[in-house]
Length: 439
Image (cartoon, rainbow, N blue to C red):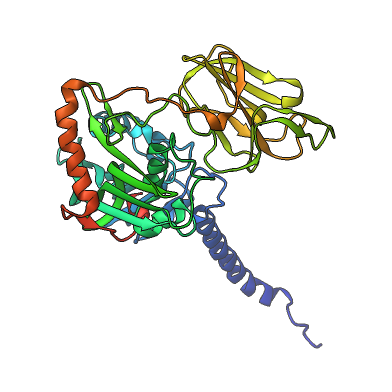
């Protein structure tokens, strides 16, 4: 009789190989999943240095880890130091000890979003953590021989230098300021300094010039951040504006060459980036109502969501819906002035009747609520209850250098003048600040 082949024989040989292959694929996918930013625990983003611990699938323990392993945790908004330490199986008592030791240097309960917490383990025991919390400062907590932790700050070589940054406006202050070597913060500060005298959206012209004497922080020889502006000069439409930073008895502020504060009762405008689409008028043709009627304010065209700032300090007199104005805020100031803001997409949190606001505080965002043809801010100003043209305001300085400080101010002003003019030599137009290195 012919013997039939045994069908089970090849299957029995194939099964162990198949199981081994599936086990290998399963292990690879497990490791890949835990290293992926799309892992189920989206708040945890870990990068590991060699050697790669095979225990990522569980408690992060590695029976072969004789060398030091490094774990980089990139922080999300909801991450906490305790969470990361728990992932590394650090006992609660040690976590509390590290927090207490580190507090005089930096409070690890205040971890910043997108920063990196670095941890080092040896034989699956935490040995050291590093956290860069400043431009050049790093918190280090490391285990001592006795087992307890010590914490200290490590600083990279750094120095603050004075620098002269100057340029000519071809496109915008922001763009040309960055080209000249300033960072975004310095450009915004410059616009804040002259915000009461220059409208940086409508007054700036091609050919206007600027000069800044600023502190610049260098870390390991690389400029990373522009510090305080010590003095500035702008020529806008042929008119020169000057600013000197001076610290009196109360606090530091910016003054013009006559010692008068550059701060005014009201900002020149409540928006930074916009254009005027409709002026103050006694008889403007309304595009929706199709008739002539007074327009007792200024309309600023701006994208929906653009921040709207309070033009001056005071108290909110009204915040809510007001007929054709839509979302509307009115603020009474301490000098018979009041300002109003209409068509807001939303009113900022905390802005309600009776609440106190400071000049420059966010009160809402540009929108198109009420009777409106598109996103814009309707801005009104009243003086002693009477509507006036916002562009006609000639606000006075809120203070001046005191007589006791006059001589010292004159000395500071002269030094700044000589630096701006080049009579005193300082570094000029540095390479653009390396903002990435300061993170």
